[in-house]
Structures are given as structure tokens and as C-alpha cells.
Length: 531
Picture 1 (cartoon, rainbow, N blue to C red):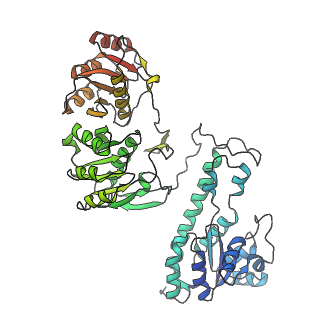
Picture 2: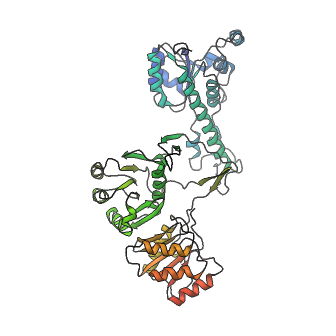
Picture 3: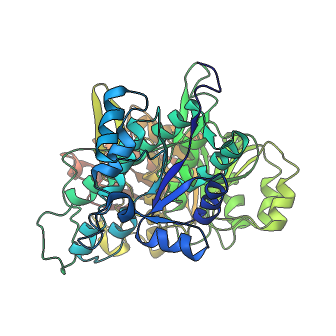
């Protein structure tokens, strides 16, 4: 089939959109090419106010819009005009017999169901009313018959379609119609997924005027994931693995972050950025985490971003080389000048001042990533992992403790300074791969033992990694000490206070060892395994 032969002339277009961004300009292009415009409700009104000639849908169907707009496009003269195969004799005869006119293009976007569902205490009746019926039906009909019909579901496609129509005297290629059809089916799939996911969380159907209370107590009975590809990646963890990033479009989090400069983000960069941003979200005061292979090698709080960075770097300057940095405050010039001295793969922060950007501009390969929204603003998403034959889903680990939650189990209680350090170390331990031991003091990690098969080895490795003195520090263990030897190891390294979940059958022996060594120990009552 030649390029000219596969083009289809657009003579009649049906426009019915909720989001009217770019609508008038696109419709003006269609009208200038002699396309007859047919429209519904508010869309028709918008076009008329712009001075465009528009035929109401009721003129096409011979049937009025009714039931508060619920029924306007659900009609044989709409779907017949979309679905009949041009040139097929029996189809041509049928539409001629019933006076059905061809519709060559549909421009539709759907009721904003997700936006409605996200509103707190939205009335149940209003939620249900925002389930679009006619829109998805037209989208599917037009997309199924893409050989003859163009379906446009996104305003971002208007400029390219307008340009092609103008270049080809009002015709669109088969390749374009096929591309639009695939996008259309993705749109309806995502829309249905959003509806099913929202309604799954409403246990009982309340009265229309009552709030649509969504229960988050139960995990979904069916896991529906429908995310568009945000960008392809050069490769995965290793060059022989394919990879791509998929984003939920919320504008929040690492997947929706804005890259300000540097080389393209890699798979490993994104995984490390997620690790450092999740850790940065734990703290309200200025905080910096330096991540290598998803584990923090240095993390610290400070009065300023610069102070926090200098403390984090001092914890393990060798491992920090080539790391990824997460910061929970806008990066200023002072911090940028210090960070620029180190080879870093990427930096994630809420923002960068113009002065900081000017400093980093000299390091053209350095990836700067701005994550939209304030820290703590995004609701924690469930954690999904793939296993052969399926997926695992769990709640995000949002557990946190305060001083009042601690159970002091030793004869000597921790001092106020030790308590503050214990709570800091405990937060860090949540983000270290198990088995994990974290040594810390004064809002600064000193040594981290991560991903070890033995908790004693984790304690030894964390102490071995320390470049700053450990005497008088505290230690956090992400899970209980199964025997006294782990506790004895951290005390030998210099820890004077320990925080751990407790819950081992050997707890009495571990507590006795702590009392014998004169150290303080607090139980949290829950663990922070991270696999």
C-alpha cells in the first residue's frame, strides 16, 4: 500500500472533551480544512463561543441529549458512523439504508474520575456520576476501526495531528491512526483500572449524598497496575538487560522527578535515587544521605545542608566516591560548592538555587534531579516485588517511634543524648539491607554493616568501616540479637547504648549481657527487615 493510498480524509469529526486545553486551536485547524464539526454539551458551547460552526450531536442522531447528559453519544448513528468499514458493500448498504453518516475522527478525553476520587469526603453519588460511559464507548469504537477512523484522546497530540493534516490536505496516514488507536486502548484500560481500584476500596455502597469512604485496611483482591512508559533506559542493572521507567503521572516521587542537568538517568541511578529519597523523607531537619548500591554509606543531620553533607561525607569518604546523594532541602551555593569537589553520579533534592545550578553546571555529566513537592507530601505507596509466577505486595514500612514508645530493658537507662542518638540510628537502620547494624552519634552515622548473612558479621563490618571514633556511640540493630554475641560485638566496638526490636527467645541472656557490660538498651517492639 502506497503512502498516499493509506491516507484517510477527515471530513467529519466528533469532539467531546472534559479537558478543553488546546481544543479551540485544534478545532480551528479542522474547520480550516473543511472538516464538519459535531459536538456535545459544553464542548459545543466552547467552540461556538470561539466563532466556529458546530453541529449538535442531536442533529446528527435525531435524538436529544437526555438523562442529565448520560445519554447523548450512545446511539447507532454515532457508533454506526464510527464502526462501519468503508468500502465493504454490506456495510455501505446498511448505513445508507438507515441514514448513518461517516464519522472520520473522534476527539475525546474522559471524565476526570481519578481527580474526583482523590477528593476527601467526595459524595458517593458524585463519584459514581464521574464514571464516563459514552466517552470510553466512542474511544473503543473509533480505535477498533482505526483503518477508517482517527481517535484522539490526548491534547498533547493536537499539534502533530494538525501539522500532518495541513501537510496532507486534511488526510491522516494509517501509521498515525494505528499509533492513536493503541494510545486510545491504553487510555481506556488505565481509566477502567482507576475505577476498579477506587471502587474496590469502598466496602458498602452508601447513599448518594454520603461520603465515599475508602477503606485501606485490606489489600486489593486483584492487583491492577497500569502505568505508561515515561522513558526507555539505555539498559538495566547490566548492559545486556533491557529497561524502561514507568510513571504514574502524579508528579510526585522519583519516577516523576525533573532532571535539570547531566547524563541520562540509568536504571541503577533511579534505584539509588529512590533509596536516598526515601531515607531523606525520614527527617524534618536538614539531612543528607549518600547512597552506594541502595545502602547509605554516610547520613547525617545538620543546622544547614552544608553541615549535614560534611558530616555525611566524613562518615565514609572512600565509599562516597561515585555515590548518589539525597537531600531534603533546596541545595544552596555553599552546599553545592562542597559537593562539587566529590565525584557524584546524581543528586536528588526538592530544588536547587540558581547559584547552586551555576556551580554544578561545570560538572556537565552530574545528574541533578528535582523531586516535586515537599518532603513527606506523598502518601506512601505499597511496595511491589516480582517473584516467578506473580507479584508480592506489602504496605510501605512507615513505622516510626518516639522516645515514649521505647521500652527500656536494662538497669541503666539511656541518657537524653543517647536516646536522641538511638532514635536517629533506628531511622537509618530502616533503610539498610538486612542484616543491618548502624553505629551513630550526634545525628551522624559512623559505621554501617549492611546485607550481612550474620548479625555478628554486620556488627563487625560496621565497626570496620568506621573512620571516626566509635567510643561513646550508639548502635541500632534492624532485628533482634539472637544471641548475646552480637551485642557484645557492638559494645566492644565502643557503643554505650543499643536499640533493637527485642522478641528473641534469648532476650533475657542479651539483657543480662548488657547489664553486665553496663550499657543501656531499648526495645522498639518491631523490626525493620529490608530485603
